[in-house]
Image (cartoon, rainbow, N blue to C red):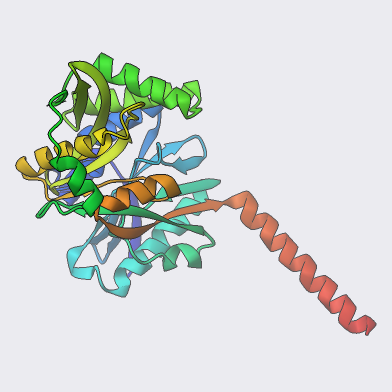
Length: 320
């Protein structure tokens, strides 16, 4: 009885995960688009136990690093359903991480909220950073009373539309990112990333207008298989906050997604205080997730420091 690590191709990976049943971040279209935009290579990792697939993860690599494209991304992880709650999965992660550490100098993985056990990473000298996100269920669109009051208003000068002109949308978001001080190289990557996802049918756009003049927009990554949507980019609406336009655009988008059969929305942005405070008014549930990282150089330095401290401790003991 033994565990075995393998690196497989995308066809084998799709066969194991039953491609077509995976979430958006594990879909072939998403992976290919992301790799092309960011100039990453694929690394499809598989760990088996006695020939049975236990764990498989599609990773992105660049030079000597395992990385992820941006903070809108969740790593897709496939775990054998029969072994999910057993030590087999933990042991499989241990095998996988040791293999990665033997090949790469840096490893960064942004785990999905479904991975709730970070111990294999702790045991393998990874740094664990706990992050949070908001998940809004669409079964009943309940909001805080202030939001309910706003969306009940009839503002005839505001109109809303779905899947509008991409150039107009991106020009707006580009200017928005400018105001936030995002570097040019990152803006260019975001544009290619979201446009590529839109061309693959993985992004929808929801716009707001005032007297037919474009005002604001929400870009939504859609996961039809899991009936989940993600809100990575939500535009500002200068001069229209007091009238409640952002809340109306949120409500329009959530209502449209519900009508399409989506059941949950990841609102993103729960780690920034002001943004999190506003999004909490839509009564989502707060979920933690992990960003894990490993640096061979940092671990080496820590090991050296510990050895030096032990030596100093022994010297001080004998001096006394």
